[in-house]
Structure formats: C-alpha cells, structure tokens
Amino acid sequence: MANPVSLHPYNTFHIAASAQQLVIATTVEQLHAAWQEARHQQHDVLLMGEGSNMLFLEDFGGTVILNRIMGIALTETATDWHLHVGAGENWHQLVCYSLEQGIMGLENLALIPGCVGSSPIQNIGAYGVELKQVCEYVDVLDLENGKTFRLSNEACQFGYRESVFKHHYRQGYAVIAVGFKLTKQWQPVLAYGDLRNLDSTTVTAKEVFEAVCQMRRSKLPDPAVTGNAGSFFKNPVVQPAAFEKIKEEFPTVPAYPQPDGAIKLAAGWLIDQCHLKGYVQGAAAVHRHQALVLINQGGASGAEIKALARHVRETVAERFGIWLEPEVRFIAAHGEVDAVGALA
Ligand code: FAD
Ligand code: EPU
Image 1 (cartoon, protein in one colour):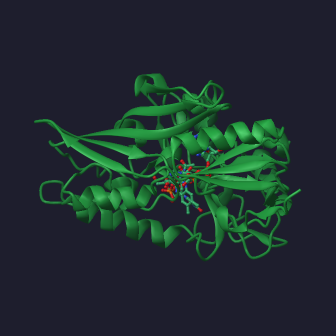
Image 2 (tube, helix red, strand yellow):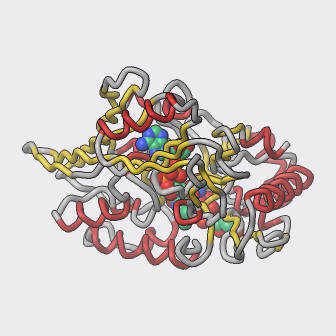
C-alpha cells in the first residue's frame, strides 16, 4: 500500500493529518475517474477545495480529491455580466479578475479563502453580501453515474451558511462550476461596519474592495501565517425573548433582526463577553482580535482545537444559555462527522 500523504499543506488550520491517497482533478472526467477508482478500492472519499473550512480530528483513512477544475468564461447581455467559473478557481482571484474587467458586485466578498466551487456550499457571505445574491446557477456532477446537471439559484436553497449541498447533495455529488450574474446597474452595499463611512454617491467598487480587505486584515489572522478556518462557529439565531433577556444586562449587544422576527446574535461578542479572547489551551487559542476565530498556535492537533472549541461552547452556554454550532466541517477517519455531536 502507498505511503499516507500529509494534508498539512492542504488545510488552513495546518493540522498535520494524513490521507491514504491524494488526487488532483483538473477535469470533470478526472474527478469522476478518481472517485470511481477510490470506490473500487473501497476507500472513503473526501472532496476538498482549499481546506479553509475544515478541521481534521484525526488522520483520514481514504482518498482526498482536490478539485482543481479551472477556467473562467465571460459573456454579457445589455443588462448583465455572466461568468461561468470552474470549481477549482480561487475565490479571491475571481473577485480580483472581475474588478479588473470592470465587473462589479463581488467586491464585498474579497479575501474569503477557498475555491469558487466551495462558495455555494455554505453560501459564503461577508460585509452585507452573500453568494446567493450573485449566483445564477451551480453545475453538479453525480459521482455515481458521471452525469452532470445544473441547479438554479432557487434550487440551491441558500440560507445563512446553508444550502442544499449540506443536505440532499452532501454525499456523492461534486460542484464542478458556478455561474454568476452581475448587473451592470451596480449599487454599492455599504451597510456593514466601516463601509458605512463611504459615500454611496461617489464610491467605486475598487474602494469598497480596498476597505473590505483592510477590515479583514485588521481582524482575521492570515492562514498563511497562523492556522485557522475563519469563524469557527455560526452566529446563533435566537427568539426575541432570549434576546431581550441578554439586552436587559447588555443594552448595546450587537443584534441583527431577521425577516421572520428572530434575532441573529454575534457569536464573537458572546465569546468575548466570557473573557475568552486570547484564551490559550495547549497549542490552540482564541484569536486576540476576533473571538470567533480559533487558531493553531503551532503544531496543534485537531483534537486540541476540538477541546478548545468544546470549552468555548460550554462556557458560552453556561453564561448565556446559547449553544453555538460550528461552521467548520469536522473530518474524522471515514469522512465528515456531525460537529455538534463531536463537541457534545
Ligand atoms: P473546503 O474547506 O476545502 O471544503 C468545505 C466543504 O465543502 C467540505 O465539506 C468539502 O468536502 C466540500 N467541498 C469542497 N469542494 C467541493 C466540491 N467541489 N463539491 C462538493 N463539495 C465540496 N466563509 C464565509 O462565508 N465568509 C467569510 O468571510 C469567511 N472568511 C474566512 C476567513 C478565513 C481566514 C478563513 C480561513 C476562512 C473563512 N471563511 C469564510 C470560510 C471559508 O473560506 C469558506 O467556507 C470557503 O468557501 C471554503 O472553501 P474551500 O475551498 O477551502 O472549502
Ligand atoms: N465582536 C466582539 N468581539 C469579538 C468579535 C466580534 O465584540 O471578539 C462583535 C463586533 O464588535 C461586532 C459583532 O461582534 O459588533 C460582529 O463581529 P464581526 O463584524 O467581526 O463579524 P462576525 O459576526 O464575527 C461574520 C461572519 C464572517 C464575516 C464577517 C463580516 C459568521 C459566522 N461570520 O463574522 O465570516 O467575514 O461577519 O461580514 O457569520 C466566516 O464565516 O468564516 C467568516 C469569517
């Protein structure tokens, strides 16, 4: 049997887990053949982009397939730009490419790590924009039969860090391309954070891009330097009664009302109120500038990060009665495991 392959370079937490085999697929045919071959060997299969939303709890005993299907095709109508983008393209490079072409609308999503093909999976979002606002369709490969099909934006069932790819299409399907529709009637989205300081009548998409990059660099650790997977937990959505209780004690609690009357709270704020910012446990730590980000201080194992996540989750639950749910996907020896269950 071949030697295990280190996944250290392939996950942004820089966990030194291994896989039995690693295949880089640059075409749909290669991706399908790699999956079939792995199944023939009775290997479990893990699809990966850039590993920026994953925590390896231990070595993965199967085949990792890295999706590196490239290519960007640009077309236009009188009203819109259309981009058809291979799933293996880097997300931030796509944002830069679109701006270079004079296409606006992706600037709020600058500097999000990962591949374009992963962007619909959790409906990536930042600074007031989510993928669902710009995604026209997602092309999918059925790994069992090798057939491809297209899902419309609506069929993707996008929600906050949610989509059909976490449910019906979680197993046995690969995203192979994403289609974007970007209007030529661009309107800046300036409702979030420091973007509010920009003048909507004169601001350019390039200026929004620069402001987003600056805010992100001031808060979020660069995975090239410090291992992390961005926000470790999702922001919890609570009912008004639970929110009012917290507000009595903390009148300035950050809160984002949802269309259905529920309130989204900031998990980073909740963790911060528990005085966990900068908290260190072994080689894992809560980031000093953003309490929602857990970091690998160097040489941490997935189990160490998990132990810290459990401590953070239990502390927040004790203080506020809110159980945070991980955004990061947990990977064990045979593939993904339920992250909430793993922390219980
Ligand atoms: P991976 O981590 O490789 O994979 C994620 C999941 O998708 C896994 O379950 C994997 O099996 C599956 N998968 C991967 N490729 C495919 C495919 N082709 N077909 C089917 N399934 C597939 N996210 C945000 O939403 N907003 C942010 O602002 C943000 N900021 C971040 C900042 C930092 C510093 C970091 C490290 C992460 C941040 N993230 C953010 C999370 C992460 O960037 C996104 O989730 C990203 O889309 C993950 O892309 P990836 O290619 O690395 O996916
Ligand atoms: N806050 C604190 N202390 C902290 C962190 C945050 O008090 O340590 C407060 C902030 O002051 C602010 C609020 O919490 O009032 C929200 O903080 P921030 O604007 O930094 O955003 P977030 O809710 O922590 C979310 C996304 C990020 C995305 C940013 C910007 C989730 C889980 N996270 O973070 O996405 O980049 O908004 O839009 O929704 C990711 O998903 O990996 C990610 C980084």
